Amino acid sequence: MPPYRIVQTFKPVTALPEDVVVNVSHYSDGAVPEPAAAVAKLFSAMNDPKDISPNAIRIYLNAGVITGQVDYAVYDVADPEPRVPIYEETRQLGSMGGGTVPVETAIVGALEAVPISGVPQARRRGRMFFGPIASVALSMTSGRCRVTQPAQTAIAAGLRSLITGGLPTWGVYSRVNGTMATAVQGWVDDAPDTQRRRGRGALKRTTYSPTGVVIPP
Image (tube, rainbow, N blue to C red):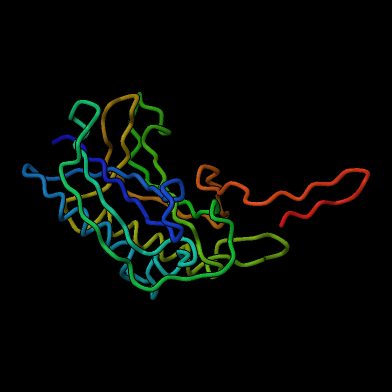
């Protein structure tokens, strides 16, 4: 079966289209596609505690930036572009965190397939960016801002649930090869990432010149 692309769109508190946060991942299914099951599995990975983690991934997302509403759209990668979703659904995350963290700050979760000869491993690795994140996801350690171990564990456990438990199962889609490799492992580093496309434009500008500083109203 062809791989499927699942797009998560997180509704922003501002309700502005330019402020939505989008995550894209890929999965494979059985002979009969069940996109509703894929949405349920991905939502559960975000919303429910998994494995050894007492907290769900949603605890480390920022309720000051996103409302918790998640719109899902599933696409068949084999369809010609522009593609029409084969399935759509909206769900609501449970309680999330808060705090003042730049909206472009994210936590990276990596997925990796088994290496094979003749194919660069970079084409068999993929990433998911979790954010906007809450302040509880970060700590200052020896002068460096780091992702906390509980946040790393929650994301790792959530991603593990996507590659276990039978179909649908997540993987890495290579646009170059036009194929998807099933993920068998992955990792979550303690270094936060910056997704500049998720940043917000300036609302005010304070200017200065030899004559003084001009503070905007």
